[in-house]
Image (cartoon, rainbow, N blue to C red; front, side):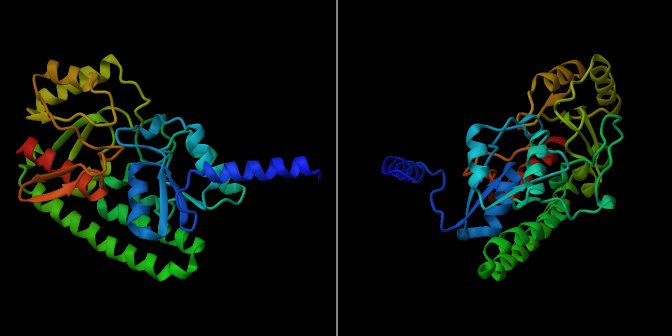
Length: 310
């Protein structure tokens, strides 16, 4: 190797270090896809991880297109976590290819059994409903996958990851009980949730609700005239008090339905496929929570639904 070439390589390596996307390469460098997965990894990894979340608040993971910076982060990450069940659309194909090549890539839903998952009736859907975080008890089953993935990268901290995971599991089970107590305030005949798309079937099973979405499981499924008319008829027939927009779905469709059905549209959006902005702390009903966390996201949704339907 000539001196000029060697010098060029050293310079290139130096530049790469200077522009590294990771702030602390001594930590486990993690890429996570959705905001829910990002939050999960941060809770369990604590100060031992640096996490780059591909998707931000308000981003629809069904139609997400990865960026050049996403690819750079994944190419240099120690481990990648994604939700799975095709939540991330065609991005999942690339993640599966990375896993097949031997990269440490984990779908956090991989340990869920077929019996635990909702199988949609939609003809186009050949896979289970991916919106598993609607039930905190089911979402808790993702914890072991993250503990496993982080412990493989840093075995010396495996006990800490497991302890954090078990502590978080307790919090999620408490969250479900809190949610049940709040939902008990809604009359049985008003436990009907109409939203922008079918993201709340797990919520429905967990809390004994009936749910209707204007669009299907994926926001890429466009609703037709008949879908709109059928939903309007349903709302009128059930004499619903309120229907709900979602933060990651365009509100135009659900606004049209609300107007034609003569029903109130909640001024608060539900978080379906993405959490709120980190640090968005609200105080309501005597407690405060950060809507940019999974627990805060769930409390926001429950409070919004209960206060709207009571």
